[in-house]
Length: 426
Image 1: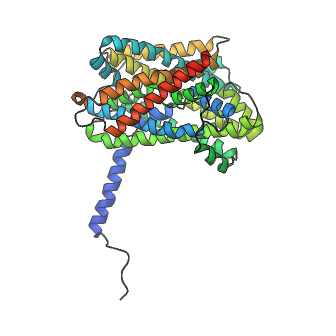
Image 2: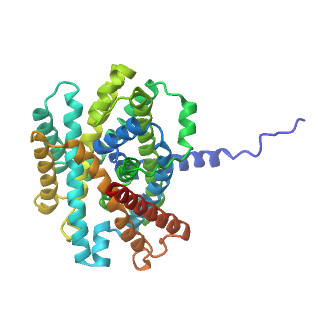
Image 3: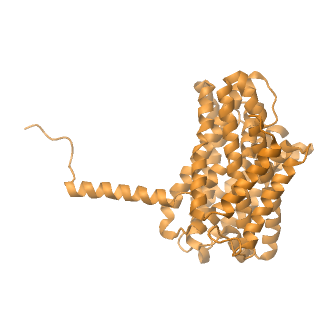
């Protein structure tokens, strides 16, 4: 008889149980995902899309390689936040207040409030810019959008809001499609992607810090940990929270990759100078076709509305936790007035600034990302101290490899920020 080379087979019941176990694990994963994917994708907001568009249109493919270390750093940083959330059951600002005191927390909250306000303004600028491409005035689009995102969060629960946010994540595929429509030279892109280039010029360093700041922003760490807690995830859910973070961190940088690529192979090669994501979308029409422009504009609108909901929400979570106020989407307005009041204030201010004429939107959008990059090392220092505190984390503290990469990330960010400041002053 011929030898059976197919290997041992599972008994029918064992095979059935194995399939059931796999489906059960997948079902649990989809039930528990959300915070990691949402947090990462929101970071491809109007300011982020503007920064990536400028990176590609001004420097071609030379900054593409930075997305490799950024992805690794983002996974590690977000994983620490998710781990602190499931183990401690507390938000990051709550832990910072308990560990470092009210004074340090107060100054950090002030810095975060103004940085997040700049980011929120940029989201409504993105809404206005994207819909102006389709002929809609900002005096109509911005108030309607502001009311929509306010109503969505104030009238919803955590579960309902999360479902809407997860659907919004799907529309980022428009940038990937736009990238393929430009018909790039994949051989050249592969070479540039794996060839690190660093130029000690003020513009290049500012852009590098901006790319880091828009991909790994301070607000993300606070929002992720708060949403993990608000979702009710526990230590036994840690493996699913970690998978959620990894998946989200990879997807967000794939989208960033295609935005830089698209602007590099079209606008940069054509020698066109742009200053905003709206100009990038319009510049694509003669270079890659009107459908590419529409997809880019639609992606900008989706990203702006998405982030205009999340950034004020992140600010409300962060500040309320820091001062011990009630903070949860599962509470009503009357039960958490400070939480919803801060959320409403951020949306109102962000909307109002955009409606003023002659506001320097590009400066607000770009430099808010640079400030993100400069503020991030200080937030990471707080995080590393907290995640290594056994009184908080028990057996879930960092290993030496994670600590090494985290400290290297802080050193690189401080170096880039310092080099940017030094070369700019010179």
